[in-house]
Length: 258
Image (tube, rainbow, N blue to C red; front, side, top):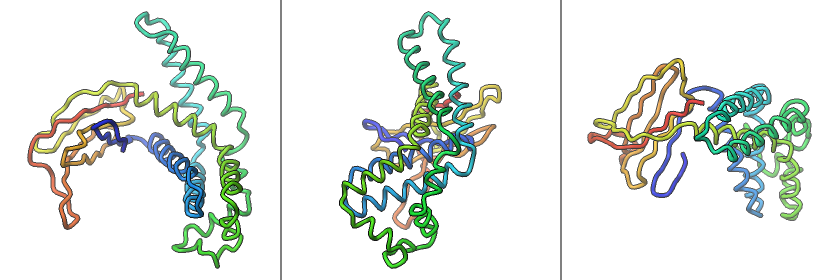
């Protein structure tokens, strides 16, 4: 979910690749927020975010996936150099940005975060993090000791641990930015809170974005796959259940294709 001025944007990935990118984007933003704090609990949260990032990026050959996506975006953008209406200065800036990211990824050896997986301190915390309450002081005295170090030392460690993941973060940021900017929103109406659209198999949609006024008493529940997607506008009720809107709901829809 993305908050904009007076509008809230909800996003739904339609393939596993974009789903992974969105999860990592969320975890990096969370870790960056936690790094602004200086308390023990801020450092706990930041390190937990780092461990979640390691867990996500360890499930797939992420570097290959990122390189493939950047190459694909670079090829598509290069075709626009022959279009007179395109801002050529801005286009060259983006192409240069993509080239730098590709070079940085090629310069990264091994799997993302491998040095962190080999870090005995982080590995001990990672192993215990799956146990409810497993990060108590008596379980991990070394972790308790680190949390009592001055904030300056803790933050220096956290920045050092996150640094090898920076090429991945930057690549994901650019890929998602180009994906989100690949289409313009259209105004749509969901009759009685329900909207469905079939997808063109020749130009597959990767990401659905629904923007609604912040004052709207409903939120969209988006689901979909390769062939179609649906949007249901729901209202929470006091007992925790949800009910679908009975009125027509206007919203902005963006089907991001690249």
